[in-house]
Image 1 (cartoon, rainbow, N blue to C red):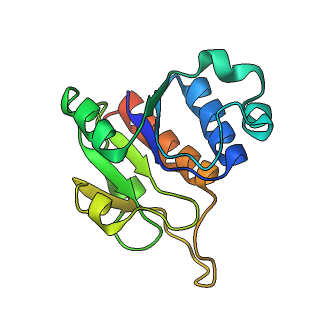
Image 2 (tube, rainbow, N blue to C red; image 1 turned 90 degrees about the horizontal axis):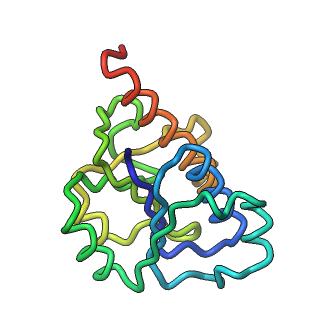
Length: 155
């Protein structure tokens, strides 16, 4: 199963909603610190509702710590970016993929992007919209990855 990685998330409700999606899809959620909140934050817990026991959560104290942990698990690191990159639904996902999403305010830093095996994007029609909400982007990309993996002969 692909894994979702949030790089230094800042907004508790976004992370709570991502956690809820990961719980529903039985997908691991990795949080790369520092976080912009405490995991005990009320808004984070409320967004995840009573699904937290079903979240397969891994915390990494830094990017280098995540990198070390990932070295023990093969798989491509796929960075999501608001502009540029391959359109997500044209990409062929693999069960071992790591889906990496950046901070809500600044996305993925250039040095982190450079470590990715590929960069993907969710296309947006309106040029005035800077980016999608983090939780929405995770749901869109993760759903496509799981759709492909359940039917490898898709169009």
